[in-house]
Image 1 (cartoon, helix red, strand yellow):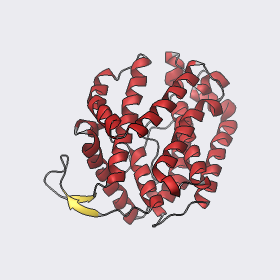
Image 2: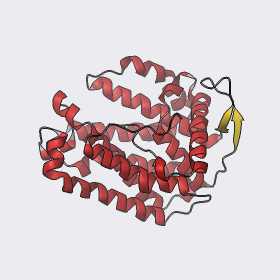
Image 3: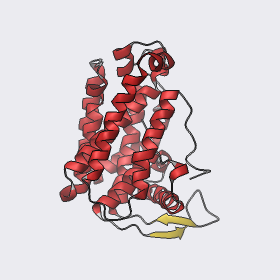
Length: 288
């Protein structure tokens, strides 16, 4: 579920790589501020990107200073200062991790031990941001019902996750939300769900777990699926990229948008191509 929203390093300006790293470290500190130190182990690329995107769309200036952290104790590095938006996104990161591990446990997989790291953070997030957590819980329940019903259509299967992202955009953007942000976030949410399902195809076939692509196409492996229906699946993802581009064109950005454009217009298509080819994930950089 996590780790697919990535930048395209060969086409990323150095200034934007530095900004991304600063925002990544800033979100880590934001998680600690809202949900405690233990929850920092769940820091994700996906919510880091949301932090970059939402700071720009809300016009919230990012201040960067050289600081130490628990992982980089000896040498200071540029870190985005924690603001109220970063703290709340830290809570979002923690709650999503908690639900992801809960889902893994319910599917009979590993995750029970790791979930302990997020239990206190989840409770803190629920107490501090009850509306945010309630929103996530409602759509996670909808997603679980959709999967329990063995929905074969990828479009229908991804709708609860896509709607969650759309509602999160409205929640964080408030009066700055609009048609463009709704279209963009819905498409991103749909993409995240379906790229994860496609990436897990072989594992889900082996374990006989729910996967809309398996139910819809019935191929014995992802390689067989792509050989038989690759063009149809590529078209499905292309419709999402079209909606993302359409949404981007309707949004007002307050600052430079090179980093967000790199992720949405280059990073997500590159990650899609990787998953369709069955390749392993590439490193984001030498080290975040």
